[in-house]
Every structure is written in C-alpha cells, then in structure tokens.
Image (cartoon, rainbow, N blue to C red; front, side, top):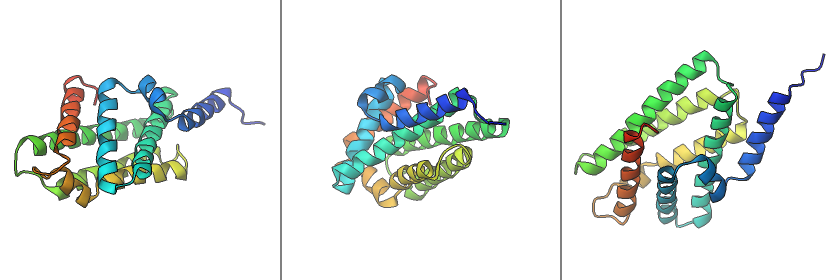
Length: 186
C-alpha cells in the first residue's frame, strides 16, 4: 500500500518554497513590523561584529527559514502533545531571555554574559529537541548556526558594552522585544 498523502506533500512543498524565498518581502508576510525591525538590528549587529555582510545575511536568513518552517509545522498540526508541551517551555524560556536581555540593558552594570549565553544555548537545545524528527539535519545546522552566533560570549560582551558602538542597536532590539512582550506576541 502506498503511503501517499497530499497533505504531507503540500506541507513539504510549503517548507521548501518558503525556505527558498527567505527574503524581505516574504518576511513581511509572516513577521510583523516590530519583529522585522528587531531582525534588521540583529543583522546590523552581526555585520558590525563579524565585519562580513554575507555572514550576517546568512545568519538572519537561517533564522527566518527556521521560523517559517516551524510555523508551517504548527499550522499543519505536526507536533505531538509532548512536543507541544516542549514548545510551551521553549516559548517561556524565550520570554525569559527577552526579559533578561531588556533588564541587562536597562539596569547598568547588571549584564552577565554567561547568563545570557546560557539562556540562548538552552533555547537552542530545546528547539533542536522540538524539531528533531520534523526537520532535516540541514535545518538543525541552521538552528545551531543562529543560536551559536548570538550566544557567542564575545558578541554579547560587545553588544552590552555601555560605551560601545552597538548601544543604539541594543536599544532598538530591547525596545522591540519589550513591545512584543507587552502585546503578547513573544
């Protein structure tokens, strides 16, 4: 007996098509303005930190591809009850990370690079577990790429330097995160 499912085929096609179209116009279809502004600032931080425009674009593109693929999986009810529970824990950890990032920004001399890095690493591990059987190793590599990049202690140290060049970017990122939290979108 054949294991053909048009629903499965449609989901795979959506993931593939959307993965290949991870550009600004597609992002605007799936991501609100505030999130888009945060992504723009994350791109600028990555570009300044690495000194490499191509690498900064790749990190953001990987982030967008992962977000879109996970959204497709949710839309098609592909997660089990256990995975949905893990997704809720991931969401809470992400919210904790956002609140921690904001707090470190607003309260001078409280930044702890290890705390921020550990939150991001924990988020990465939870997300990898969530999508373990749903996404390809290439997508797992994208998740690792994004989280490893932004949890880099040197990047975080530069980002939170109160006199550093990244301060305007951090302010915009934290303002955006605060807005998303207030609106219940994160």
